[in-house]
Image (cartoon, rainbow, N blue to C red; front, side, top):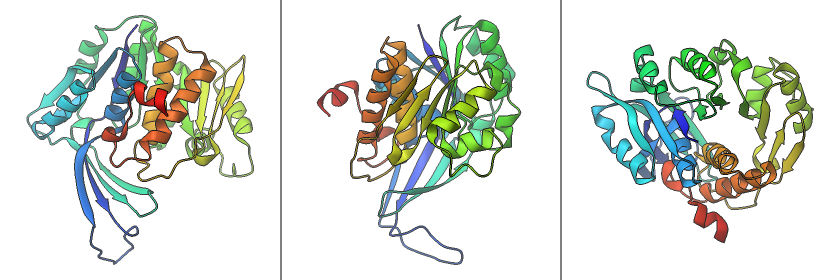
Length: 298
């Protein structure tokens, strides 16, 4: 069984600041870190480090070849990544404040240059019951999902960054929603969810998509899994956060990687919680993702 992460590859520029810049303000950065990122790349690396047979599909410019090296060093197959001569790689401008929180500006670049022809070529390499992991940082998501559904692949959707495009996708094809509270409220098209519990939110999302399992992440409140058979609540591990950039991507990769390895859901949730806890204690996105061996020592 293989997992294809069809997603973004970014060059991340992370600026360490005392506080997020305000309108009209100019501030100095204490540090600048340039490294690999993109939700797709992060999740591919997390999947591979969790022990999955991981493949990445997407697109970069000539300036992003080092991103392929990062994926390959983590054990991810990169044969499905297109290198384009006429567009720059996607990038992210990340403000990281003294409490470890982030503000992020994305430039799509090559991530928005996926073609149907590339999708067709990639999908020939995968078959029924392989996993497909998607986020919302590339184009052609609708076509990718339809092709995967026709093949009988298991579709995992992390609808981040959330926008109106998500609601136009064939969401009835999704097998696993990997969502936070804001994304859940937007998919449900509800404004007032602050008084709802995680269980209530997950139940409403399952009522709308009864064939899907819901994995709801709630930051310091932990996470929750719900399908037609069970509800599992997973506490968060308490750590001192330094950089939360790849926490959700790490959780998603280790959860799906654990399921693919045959772990019980409760064990996959626990391993994913450990992995994301370790990730937030480190600077950077992809470089912060731990190995399976580190989880065993945590």
